[in-house]
Length: 441
Image (cartoon, rainbow, N blue to C red; front, top):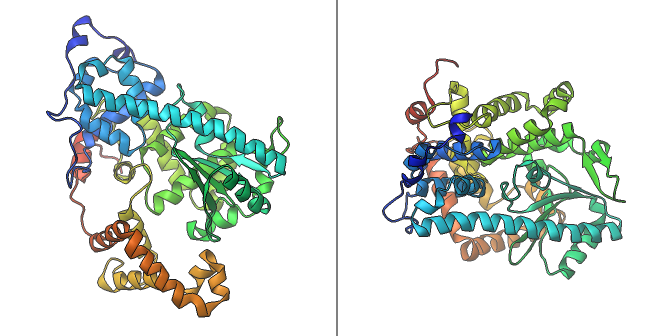
């Protein structure tokens, strides 16, 4: 690790490579992935996790404008900024780019602080109302990172006793929150300006998320442990937390995709808790969920990427690992519509070619005119009053045309592109040149 810590006096002033017009308005195609920038982002993040300074020569050769956008896309800009600050790199770049890096870090810290403080108030109200609750995912993971704000948060996820749903909604409305509640969804969404966003989970999986997860988590109370300091707070054991985190990541991975931050979360958790975990129990439970291989492959990939700070080209990945890395890297923090559409096409009843015209026509029919099972899951009122379904369908189409036009256009474009070879910088040959060639399979 010494090479990441030592820095000669002459290297300090080499400056930082950047575009001639940093942070200029992006044009169509500017989101195209740059593999080298991704690996530079991962290198910086690994330096932050191991609390070592990055090699100043390497930083001087980085295009930190591209690294910035890659980091933003994967929800890792704050952690990258912190290590660049420690290395003194922000002072050597264009002021507007330096300002943007700092703003990402400052926004991450501020948002985490606001979410944390508000969550304490919300859970306090739930205690008064007698509603049990379990903080999930990033709420706990953020504390395992070396510095506050390294782990960026878009929202807070909390599992709660659904019997208290009406009281919870009333309380949140009283606190000024807008409520989005769908009977078929696993969670209700509560939002309030400027940044507050809480996903309150009625269950951990819906039927649409996958039947294995839906069945596995039906009797969730049996897996919960009572908190010692509260009357209604609960938590998972360390093993069950890891199992749920893995199952949640897999859900996104097979639907719309999930980004490289998911691998970083897995690495951070394993480093913190791994030695004390009952891995036999974990493997047995993962088998029930059908994700043993996914967990093994993603864990090994996370350990290779973050186990120590690797310069671009230094990590040796197998063919399967290269494929998995490319999918994580191409998805962004919360996946993308292309992955979601292709997954949906593959899940349709066999029409021969999953990406053929017949399958795409069937996809459009189902999106425009959902079947009764969809109504039973998402809108049970209309499932019970079938005569009203045609009016709801017309309303849904009109709502999409007037209020969701851009999303619909993106979905249609994704449907057209489904099955086509993607021409981007994550092609196999680029992965090999950046990651290093390996004969393993």
